[in-house]
Amino acid sequence: MYNFRTDLAVERRDIYKKNNNLKEVDGVESYEEEINEKLKTYKVKIVNQNGADALGKPIGDYITIDIKKLKLATEEDIQKSAEVLSKELKELIGKHVTSQEDILVVGLGNIYITPDSLGPKVINEIDVTRHILAYMPQYLPENTRPVSAISPGVLGTTGIETLEVIKGIVENIKPKLLIVIDALASKSIERISSTIQLADTGITPGAGVGNTRKDLSMDTLNIPVIAIGIPTVVDAATIASDSLDLFIEKLQQEAKSNEYLNQLVEQDKYEMIKDALLPKDYNFIVTPKEIDDLIENMKDIVARGINMSL
Image (cartoon, rainbow, N blue to C red; front, side):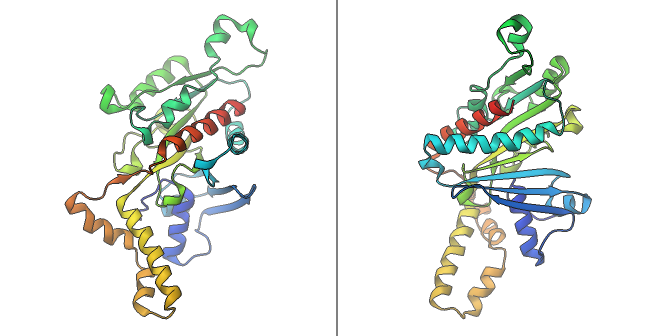
């Protein structure tokens, strides 16, 4: 399997297509929709094992929402993005549970590390109703869905695997579906904190930065798991590779026929750069300087989108 260096199904599809000179991957269906000049959605559906093996992802639906210029987003931009997220999330939820069944929302990550703090911050904004339905149902509309939420922390501060925490909660409160929010890794600088991926196949915490934990999925929890992932970091090799692409593109514009540069474009520069950086421990995980603002905007979009969908 390829070293895709990204959690995003749409990026894995593009890498596989490019490396194999394909128009589409066998076992994969994909669609694109432009909402407006700032919003675009990509839908990747892995329909059989051929597609799953090719992309290294389980069979299921993967929806990517791209949001341009998020660090300069207005209130109107944030609200529109939340509405798009809500629409897609509602459709995924509707495939697995009815409109009144219990849902547990889980925010993964470390609130003390900004690029990893999105999950816990979203949890603080979720409209939880399970306790009100239990003790003061008269204050809620008749068909209110029971919603509970938790941020379980990380293994480094709790000493407990995320799966162990969530499994204990699921066995006790018995939700019918899990929604999990987590930070992802991307192969593209442009997608950092400006892309949302929805998937109904669960999630493997830490996989994007080489710190893989036990996965949260139907197989491990016995209930459907919808993952909402947002890329917040890239590694140094990705930045160097992207920078080389821009450099080569610039030189090609100035000297269009250059055999050496054409060969560079066709090679996987990422692996070459990574091999050079790893021995010196220089393959850092990198996040943009505006990450605080980006996380706050994305937190508002994700929390509103979840609340509207539930």
